[in-house]
Image (cartoon, rainbow, N blue to C red):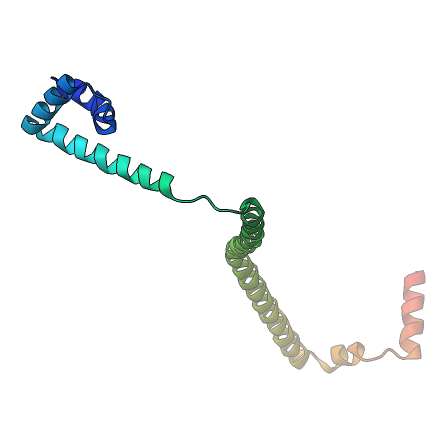
Length: 155
């Protein structure tokens, strides 16, 4: 008997339906072949496990409503979890962008503050160095100044 023939006969042998002559050949082959002996033992364990399942009583009530309710609960939990996961991953992607915008606006603010300070200092220096007439002309114009300006524009 070959290993292939032996393996195909395992179920019949364990079920007790293999003819006695073939059963004797199978037993002789299994005694000589370690691989087929291990295969027969595995088949025997599997058959016993399946028979033990058949012997268990079936539940007396309908299980589907409980199964459906549990599936619905798990779907709701999974749905809520996926929303939070999406928001969290979106937040993680936005953090670098927000940091870049914050740094850019801070840098621009500091730049503008520096420009304003430099222009203020420059204006103060110019005012301190200017002759009194320029300073006087920067003050509020008088009525005479307005008249002179108006007459100059007519010419």
